[in-house]
Length: 155
Image 1 (cartoon, one colour):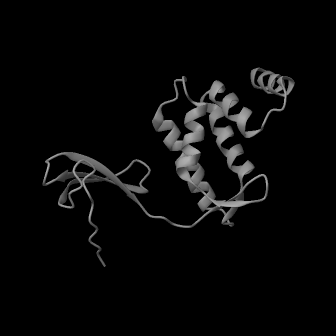
Image 2 (image 1 turned 45 degrees about the vertical axis):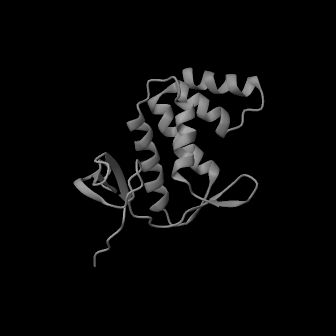
């Protein structure tokens, strides 16, 4: 069964585009397509991936919301600002966390579990990013809590 999808050019809005090259991404879960617009001749890249299961995140207040890969990426990006962590490592963390969540038995997961999964990975990757992420994720109430975590990290 094949489907023909129309991809609009992001530059001129034309629906007359063609696929120039197709590749699997490194994680083998997305397909990278290099496209060319027939109208304006510009090239652009699209990524396709299967939306498997809707994961629900249980927030601290008990409310539920759909898992959002972009929201997770944004949080990690903020923690990694002005560090040497490459974007490829951030993408790898997002993919690993999402894959682990999808392979679990439940479609509902507490936000603190996701935070802990990310924190564990950042701790191995970059201590500053780990502390930044943890300070938001764990909601350090005062300087003493923050100091305790830094000492734990150093010791």
